[in-house]
Image (cartoon, rainbow, N blue to C red; front, side, top):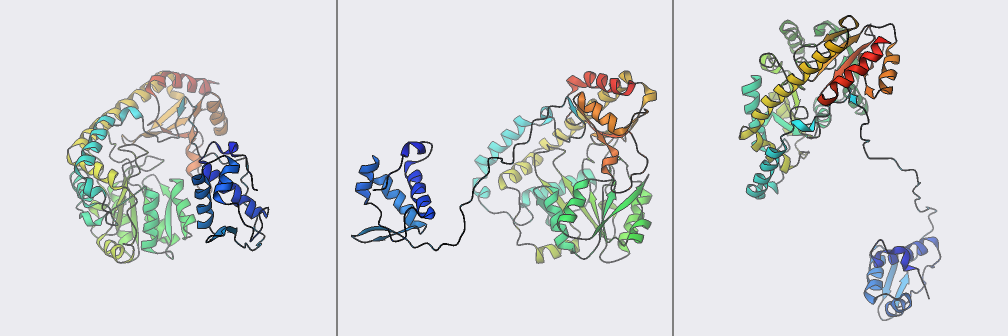
Length: 466
C-alpha cells in the first residue's frame, strides 16, 4: 500500500500535495507503468484523510494523463516513455525582482516623482466615479489606439496648450514610450536607418538594438542636431527632443527646427520623432512650440508621456502620427490591442475633462519652480561660485552643474557615493568618444527632498573643497 507523510503538505491543500507525491513517484519510476493504485476508500483510510481528498488527487492525475480509470476495476498508471528529460530543479540562488529602496540622501540620477506632488485624493475620487458610472464601458475592449474619450481629451489639450491641430484618430495610446517605439519601427520598417542624439537618452539606442534595426549616433552642436550630419550619415528617421533636450537641456532655436523640417521633406521615407518629454514644465512663459505644430509637410511623429506630469509609475504615453502613417497603421497594425487598461484610460480622461489635470499642472509647475529656485539658492550660498557653474534653461526638472576642481570625475562620483549622494556625469550619456565635458553633472532634482537640501549642499561642499 502506498503511504505518504501528509504533515509535510500543511502549507497547501491536502489533495494537491497528495497529487504531487504520486505524480513525482510515477515520474521517478517508483510507481511503474500499468501498476494499479489503491482504491480511493482504502487509500483514504490508510492515509487518514477523506475519500474526497484521494478522489480529487486521482482526478487531477487523470486530467494530466498520469493515470487512467477502468470501470469497476480501479486506477492504473499510464505508460510513460522514457525521454531522458529530468525534472527541472530550481537553484537556491534566485534573481531578486524587488527594486531596492534607495539608501541615498539624494539621487540626482533618478526621475522618480515626489509623492507629495501627486493628487492622490482627486485621483481616488475620479476612480470611484468611473467605477460607479462607467461599469459597462470598462468591460469593453478598447480600439487599438485607446478609448476615444481619452484621445479626444488629449487632442483638446494639445490644441490649447501646445498649439497642435490633431484629430483624435491620429493619437495612439500605449503603456510607456518603449512600447510605442516598437510600433513605430514596425510601421516605418527595418531597412531604413534611425538616428539617435549623442548625447542622449540611452534607452532609445537599446530599443533599436534589440529590434535589430540599423541606427547610428548623431552628434550635436549648441543648437541641437545638425541636418548636414544627417545627410552625411544617411539617416532616414531621427529621434530628437527639441523643446528640452535630455541631458544637455538645449532648447532648439526656430531656425534649426525649420532646417530639420526641410531635411525631412527632402525624401518620402524621412521622418522626425519629436519627443516632447517634460516640455510642459517650463517656468518662464508658455511652453516652446512643438515641431509638429510648424510642420507643413506632415513628417513629424509627436510623442509624449504622462510619466513626468502625473508620476513616473503611471505608464500612459501617446504618439500622434502624420495622416499617411495613421492610415498605414490602421491597415497593417490595427490587430494590436491597446496596452493601457480601460480603468486607467477612463480615469485619466475624466481627470482631464473636469479640469483636474490643468489645476494639477499649474500646481506642479509652481512646485518644481520653487524647488529649483530653492536648490539653486542653497547651492549658491553653500558652494563657492568660483567652484561651480549652473547651466539651465527654465524648463524641466534637471539642470547641469559644472564642478571646477583638480579632482577627476570618477573621484567626485565615488566621494559623493560615500556621503550618500548619487551623481550622474554628463559623460555617461555619450556614445564613443566623449568631448570635453569633464566634471559636468546632470542634476535631476524631481526626487530630491527639500528637507535635506541644506545637508546635501553641505556634503557637496565638502567634496568640492577637498
